[in-house]
Amino acid sequence: MAQHSTLDTVFAALADPTRRQILSMLLEDDMAVTDVADPFEMSLAAISKHLVILANAGLISQEKRGRVKWCKLEPDALREASIWMQSFGQFEAINLDAFERFLEVELSAGGARAPED
Image 1: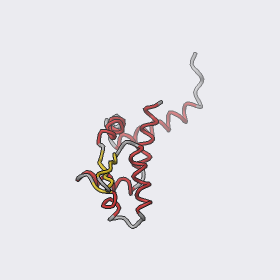
Image 2: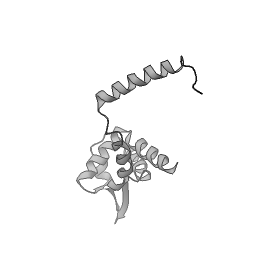
Image 3: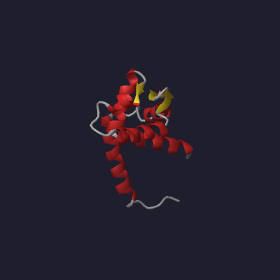
Image 4: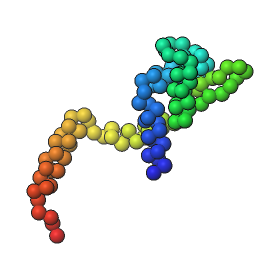
Protein backbone atom coordinates (compact mmCIF):
# COMPACT_ATOMS: atom_id res chain seq x y z
CA MET A 1 0.00 0.00 0.00
CA ALA A 2 2.86 2.40 0.74
CA GLN A 3 4.18 1.88 -2.80
CA HIS A 4 0.89 3.08 -4.29
CA SER A 5 0.87 6.07 -1.95
CA THR A 6 4.32 7.07 -3.20
CA LEU A 7 3.30 6.52 -6.81
CA ASP A 8 0.13 8.54 -6.26
CA THR A 9 2.14 11.43 -4.84
CA VAL A 10 4.64 11.36 -7.73
CA PHE A 11 1.96 11.12 -10.41
CA ALA A 12 -0.10 13.86 -8.74
CA ALA A 13 2.98 16.10 -8.79
CA LEU A 14 3.65 15.25 -12.44
CA ALA A 15 0.03 15.91 -13.43
CA ASP A 16 0.56 19.67 -13.54
CA PRO A 17 2.25 21.13 -16.66
CA THR A 18 3.96 23.88 -14.66
CA ARG A 19 5.60 21.31 -12.40
CA ARG A 20 6.68 19.21 -15.38
CA GLN A 21 8.25 22.31 -16.93
CA ILE A 22 10.07 23.06 -13.68
CA LEU A 23 11.48 19.52 -13.66
CA SER A 24 12.62 19.96 -17.26
CA MET A 25 14.38 23.19 -16.33
CA LEU A 26 16.13 21.47 -13.43
CA LEU A 27 17.47 18.80 -15.78
CA GLU A 28 19.99 21.41 -16.92
CA ASP A 29 21.33 22.38 -13.49
CA ASP A 30 20.38 23.40 -9.96
CA MET A 31 18.48 26.69 -9.94
CA ALA A 32 17.63 29.41 -7.47
CA VAL A 33 13.91 29.66 -6.74
CA THR A 34 13.79 33.12 -8.30
CA ASP A 35 15.35 31.76 -11.50
CA VAL A 36 12.81 28.94 -11.56
CA ALA A 37 10.04 31.53 -11.29
CA ASP A 38 11.35 33.82 -14.06
CA PRO A 39 9.80 32.13 -17.13
CA PHE A 40 6.34 31.83 -15.56
CA GLU A 41 3.63 34.44 -15.45
CA MET A 42 2.69 33.76 -11.86
CA SER A 43 3.74 35.01 -8.46
CA LEU A 44 6.76 33.74 -6.58
CA ALA A 45 4.32 32.45 -3.94
CA ALA A 46 2.53 30.34 -6.58
CA ILE A 47 5.83 28.91 -7.83
CA SER A 48 6.80 28.17 -4.23
CA LYS A 49 3.62 26.11 -3.82
CA HIS A 50 4.54 24.09 -6.91
CA LEU A 51 8.04 23.57 -5.51
CA VAL A 52 6.62 22.33 -2.19
CA ILE A 53 4.52 19.74 -4.06
CA LEU A 54 7.57 18.60 -6.03
CA ALA A 55 9.65 18.42 -2.85
CA ASN A 56 6.95 16.48 -0.99
CA ALA A 57 6.93 13.96 -3.84
CA GLY A 58 10.72 13.69 -3.53
CA LEU A 59 11.21 14.92 -7.10
CA ILE A 60 13.32 17.89 -6.02
CA SER A 61 15.28 18.94 -2.99
CA GLN A 62 15.79 22.46 -1.75
CA GLU A 63 18.67 23.92 0.22
CA LYS A 64 19.55 27.35 1.38
CA ARG A 65 22.93 28.68 0.24
CA GLY A 66 23.47 32.00 1.93
CA ARG A 67 20.30 33.99 1.35
CA VAL A 68 19.26 32.05 -1.74
CA LYS A 69 17.12 28.91 -1.79
CA TRP A 70 18.25 26.46 -4.49
CA CYS A 71 16.32 23.65 -6.13
CA LYS A 72 17.88 20.40 -7.30
CA LEU A 73 16.31 17.62 -9.35
CA GLU A 74 16.18 14.24 -7.57
CA PRO A 75 15.91 11.82 -10.52
CA ASP A 76 15.90 8.70 -8.32
CA ALA A 77 12.41 9.67 -7.16
CA LEU A 78 11.16 8.90 -10.67
CA ARG A 79 12.67 5.39 -10.63
CA GLU A 80 9.69 3.69 -8.95
CA ALA A 81 7.23 5.41 -11.29
CA SER A 82 9.39 4.53 -14.27
CA ILE A 83 9.57 0.86 -13.26
CA TRP A 84 5.79 0.81 -12.79
CA MET A 85 5.23 2.38 -16.23
CA GLN A 86 7.71 0.05 -17.93
CA SER A 87 5.55 -2.90 -16.95
CA PHE A 88 3.09 -1.58 -19.54
CA GLY A 89 5.82 -1.18 -22.16
CA GLN A 90 5.33 -4.74 -23.36
CA PHE A 91 2.11 -3.64 -25.02
CA GLU A 92 1.92 -1.58 -28.17
CA ALA A 93 -0.85 0.98 -28.58
CA ILE A 94 -2.60 -1.13 -31.22
CA ASN A 95 -2.45 -4.18 -28.96
CA LEU A 96 -4.02 -2.21 -26.13
CA ASP A 97 -6.92 -1.30 -28.41
CA ALA A 98 -7.34 -4.95 -29.37
CA PHE A 99 -7.09 -5.98 -25.72
CA GLU A 100 -9.78 -3.46 -24.79
CA ARG A 101 -12.11 -4.87 -27.48
CA PHE A 102 -11.35 -8.39 -26.25
CA LEU A 103 -12.24 -7.39 -22.68
CA GLU A 104 -15.48 -5.73 -23.81
CA VAL A 105 -16.51 -8.91 -25.64
CA GLU A 106 -15.51 -11.14 -22.73
CA LEU A 107 -17.22 -8.99 -20.13
CA SER A 108 -20.44 -8.69 -22.12
CA ALA A 109 -20.39 -12.45 -22.79
CA GLY A 110 -19.57 -13.15 -19.15
CA GLY A 111 -23.02 -12.08 -18.01
CA ALA A 112 -24.68 -14.55 -20.39
CA ARG A 113 -22.59 -17.56 -19.35
CA ALA A 114 -23.72 -20.08 -16.84
CA PRO A 115 -21.42 -20.37 -13.81
CA GLU A 116 -18.98 -23.27 -13.98
CA ASP A 117 -18.93 -25.70 -11.03
